[in-house]
Length: 159
Figure 1 (cartoon, rainbow, N blue to C red):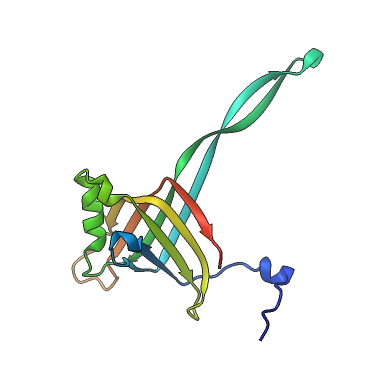
Figure 2 (cartoon, rainbow, N blue to C red):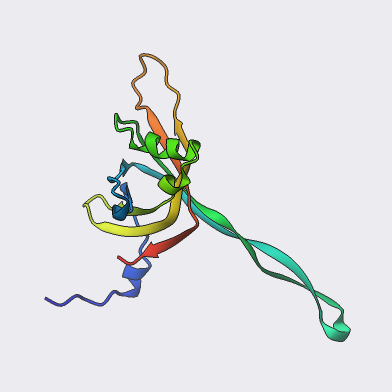
């Protein structure tokens, strides 16, 4: 069986994902952290720097050049579980154990049929924030957990 060449329609089709799996570097002997139901966002940013250059007899010319990169962030949500791996990972950061806390993390996105649709590697990632949503006694909603990850760099994995 031969694999067909992707058409422009295949390449430009929006990705849909219904679950997100976060796992840590297998070389660090850490288990996958679990399945998340929401990706609030992946954010990368390079701050623009204004530069005024001489344009000869035409006077000064304003330019914008790439400046300092901000650390990429990823925000994930899931229903709170009994698994305490996220809390332990975040506690390493709080305790100043950065050699344990900063690891390569892999975020894999799956569609509703279980096919991988996208993946990212978060280099030297660590949990900067772990939040458990508020809830009233007797309420029927699911207790949610929100994880904010910061990393040095992020790369898109080929699917």
